[in-house]
Length: 231
Image (cartoon, rainbow, N blue to C red):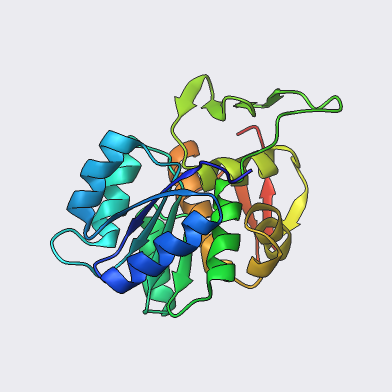
């Protein structure tokens, strides 16, 4: 449900923020805007939005630095907007903590779909689905969205959590790139392998004893990944 969800839009072009505010408000979002990362960070701390949409190139504090600052204190979903479409820039934004990347120009229908997907959380467990999943060295709480590895709590971003949750639910199974992308990001992302590569790398840095020699998330060359819950 989108009603009253808070969205913070950050862009230094007034015409863009004006159009986005009008369109998003029409879809029953509560929208506030900021013209740069510094102002956005202050507004975030005062208002605590449910999602942040930020441009990359802005004066003073840009989108990448804003992502890093937000990630240091919050797991809020972040969508980055940019005219730059190179894979290197996308990877840099994802590495900085963004959950999604939309290239300008874009249609509002596309942006709204990305917003809905980013706001979507794992549904409350029903039909016998347990709230807590334990597998080997891992304990996953789907309701609190918490993860412990070998008894130690891990701080994960929303997409990192969703990806790890899917892996934990399919231990020992070879999962193709397309399967993981469709399950975590949606059917429109099955060709966006850079998303998967970046987030697998981030997860490994957090959960593996040695990310250079992964023991939990194993690579199946040219195919995908396999999750081994015990090292």
